[in-house]
Image 1: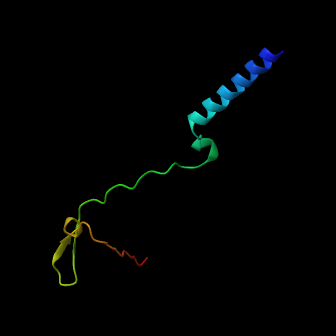
Image 2 (image 1 turned 90 degrees about the vertical axis):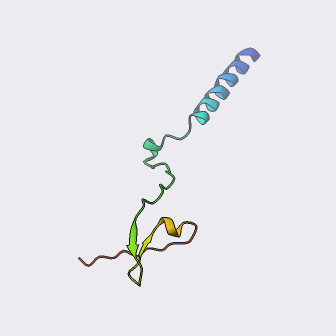
Image 3 (image 1 turned 30 degrees about the vertical axis):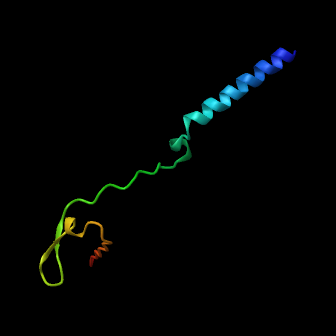
Length: 71
């Protein structure tokens, strides 16, 4: 009887380890996993003086872009 209890405990423990190692099933939880952000594409915009500013020239600085629309 003692051997049977030990065997059942081992099977339960291995099942728990296998389920935990598999990771969460995001589809069944209806959750999308986090994807790291992608780098911004290279572009150029005019500054207040009309000179073109490239994103590459601003590397390492904080950049805040405002986009708006009127529809």
